[in-house]
Length: 368
Image 1 (spheres, rainbow, N blue to C red):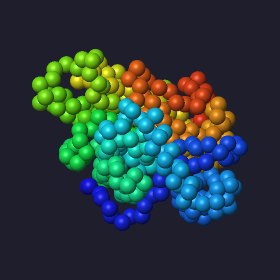
Image 2 (image 1 turned 45 degrees about the vertical axis):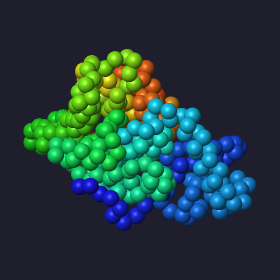
Image 3 (image 1 turned 180 degrees about the vertical axis):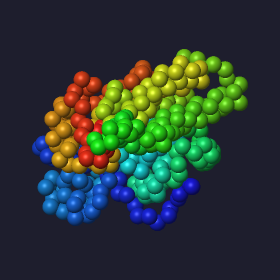
Image 4 (image 1 turned 30 degrees about the horizontal axis):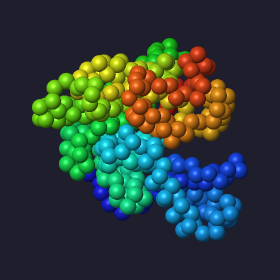
């Protein structure tokens, strides 16, 4: 389903704020969204509350003009490698996928395909249109990322409208947490992890992202063939970049046999694709986020996060999705970066596994 201007309500993307919490009146740029005018004051800034004028600014419109001029200047300095490209982002309605989409827009992509199974992605597309003055071709697509026909449609449509995609970040993912084998205390019989859940996690977390990446690689290869180009040469620009979303769970986590297996599987897929796709000039890497402030992690509950997660991270807080997005853009923009990047805020495989099993055998664990 191709979704466009469906009147679903616009997500307000905040491209900038004044960092006054630490006494600095300097500009800091980020992507985010607001939920209420009362919370942020004028729906412009999540930190300053312009209505109370704590930064000494007397005019909101003057501030916006200053922010826009600074945005144009900073974008020229930071976005030389990403500027003008077309990107495909799955799982773009929330969490890491949404933050990656916003960060790529901030850094000057020409067009972006926003893919998700929920229509919330449509309001993100509307927000991007609003805050870029339609400079960016933002297109929302609602569907199942594991559906081959849907995937091909997205690539066909975004290519026709915005050009051949050169950036792919397949960020959509699911988790179905449960013990691998659980013994009933009365009967003594073991219940195994549901095979249907394993297959669904495998489809969404491993097979789908690999094929969204392969779709881009294949189309770049076809484009080069049509232009009479052979194997990619070092004198050429890099033709494309794929960044898979791994997880610290790829090193193992109780209760996540399917999720951990798929994230570890992405490492092997990326390593192989790196060797093959570079023939066509396409780079491939994996980022392994730690505990990130996403709907998946928040579903564990505030008490569980406070008691079982935060004490084992160096930052003593959840990683922000925009921090992961910034790291992904670093991987995209720096051609010397290869392999895997661990953005775990100090958590590593040797740390205590923050898992908990409730009375029904369901497991709380790493959902990043």
